Length: 252
Image (cartoon, rainbow, N blue to C red; front, side, top):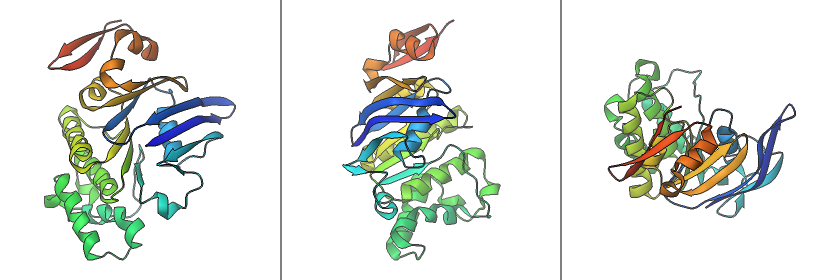
């Protein structure tokens, strides 16, 4: 499990994460929701050690992420940033292979190549494996980056807006693949997502934030209420049951 304890982060005197404490249980999908500027991405970056906290700490299965050696942490936790660019021209296979670096140090073994093949197959990228990233559509390229993270073989996968710039079809495709990673491969997936209905349809738990503060955390069905969503997004919302899922409809 991931334990976030009294974490704070400020930029230029502005507190962007304010004394947040929350536990993410192992297994399933947990979605961080909230308006722009709520602190979601900053909290995820602190949890993955991309950013240092000003105070507080984050534990992953009891390991303090700020103190655990990088190679050790990289075998337990993988992260994908919101913006991803490569300064060299890579094929899909070469990008996905980067996920094995914590295990192989760049010298791929037979096991590494098998894991790379599995990740390519899982994200339906095998036919594109030898294409360069700049020859792919946005959705294909995003799948390649997430495949790289999956290939790292960690128990915990943290993704900052993996649906960024994806259309409806590709968003559904991505979430089905992430759902499969959680259900079939036993990974704990934590992601920042803007669409609360995506969070409702695919997540087991929600962490809701506003203005750097934790508003609520718990099972998705319990948090998808008009009262909570109004508090988080400052907009009137109706919530309807459709196909066993709670769908939010903002109206003012």
